Length: 432
Image (cartoon, rainbow, N blue to C red; front, side, top):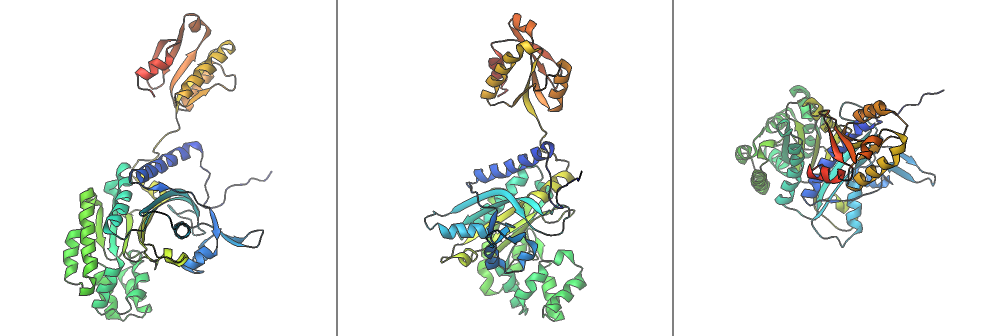
């Protein structure tokens, strides 16, 4: 017999694993709803040309792309931004701001490492149709709120920059090939200083220009204080960008997340379609890779149709966030559990047990019953294995006395209840 396992970078998630992932997804999506984002659902497969329009053929090397039976080029979605741009172009009647979120699977054919898989869950948050500091702030605050709910806000830093501001400063300092330098700056954290300078030189900068880039992109700190430092280096044409960063800092302070945020001129997000604000969420202790990133991409939607629509958003990384929660001892978030197990002592009370199960399920509880003909001890052991909070024991002798027995699994205590007042008793305890 041939043993078949899952593909590398693809994972089987049994209930004990998926329960916690589902809890994390719920926290992310509840936060989205609190901020007024609306859930969408889109195809997992798109025409390959959708990604060529956005990124050229370079991205396709990392995708699962193939010809279908109609010989059409199609791709398992590696990201959802192009799909959303397509949707916005298709519906001219959408009222702004358009605020969308979604959690679903993505696929990228790349090297598998901790926090990076080939099939992975990703959450996308976007605001379309609004070009404002308020929208930028809301995107960052939504992400920060997720980590506050997870209790790891002290372990997460949001590093924020503005590409327009950085480009203007570089050019004012004599760096003419500022745009070419951006791709090297994006990888600065992974390099030593000499390697960084050499890579800049390979992009056409001379050694003096490379040193300038290194010096400027070392600027980092609390947003308000760092902006004051930047004002001395900022040319007149970039003053609007500085003002925008200051307004962003004020909004983040009003939301109470300023302690999680820093201005860092080395953050550029290598994707050229970002037009202003960019940010990345990092593990504050530096043990993990970037958790996720985002920014403003006001020109992207225009690639897919006849109108320009400003946009800002981020993609939430579930896999790296799970690694962070593990580091903090906060994973798993939730155990597999059941509210009630209805234990029937004998076959002649089984139907009565099923009546109780139906009544409790009608009240919204998760309830299991015996499906295998186990004895009393076997049923109790199974109830313990599924983390059942309570066990309702239904026996012939108890029923003859007008009673049933309720066992509290955490303490082991048992209590007799009127057989007709089980629901009322649980309600009085706020059990549901």
